[in-house]
Length: 374
Image (tube, rainbow, N blue to C red; front, side, top):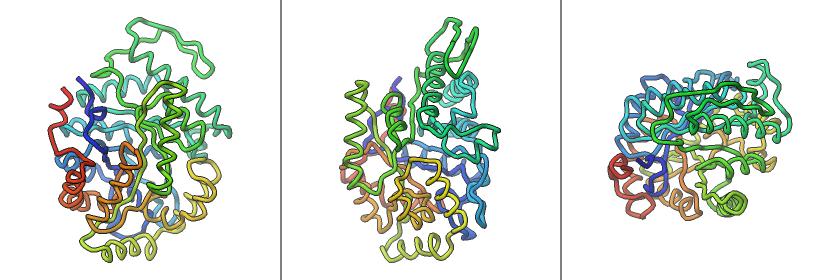
């Protein structure tokens, strides 16, 4: 069985951050996303029904302050993924796991179990860490050099990969982990599951090139993304002989007219932005993460309010489909989608944008990915 997420369905589309209060919109409007389990379950069934490829969560333990304490309420990504996989049939669901806070043997067992539940539809998003206040929450020190963070992540992933592929009992004597008589059953349902990693620093991108099936990275838009994609794919092939897919992320406002879309963006991301949370989040990104350059951070304040710094895709169904096509033509393998109200806005997106993408040849006509992957 070939895993659905690794099956060619055209340009990949998936939801992002629906397990977090507010989603990706740093706003104070009363109708901002309520990340309850019931809402996520309804969204998962809808995304499955309309043919999206995946759902991807964010792992968070403390909020971003401001008036709303943005991302202060978060469903655990692995428990969330297990519940969604048990309740859907086709869509892949990815668990986001931080290497610093989760032991690799425990994660290997958890993820293998989740993959058994989903019959091969699970995926793992590996995060090497960046958020210093969360390290402090766990009583840990954030290594200031990316080499140490990604060195730990490399060994962490090596342990998991060996747990999944080895049937004999083994020991591991590494720099970060000293393990004895390791064994773990069951294994994942269908061999190694798809691996995702988000990294925009040189070390993060190299980790993704070496280990991931899909590398997430932040870009201004499709235009500057062309060179980013070429560089990432060339690095993976030249250094490691691997072909990786490159993903980026977006926030979408799609309405019948461009004026309606722009007005709604202005309403939630400027008039009613949670600027306290925006500025705190940007400060953290600037101090402790290399995901955004200083130039990007200086111009990103409205983009952080609109969608946590992701690419804005705003306009009519034609506008939105055209912009997604530009990312496809730039060489990206897919993009994540975030909405203020994931359910009602995904319904409209599915009705109006997905058929346009199929007509353009960006997405293939809807089939049963389970049958196609068999």
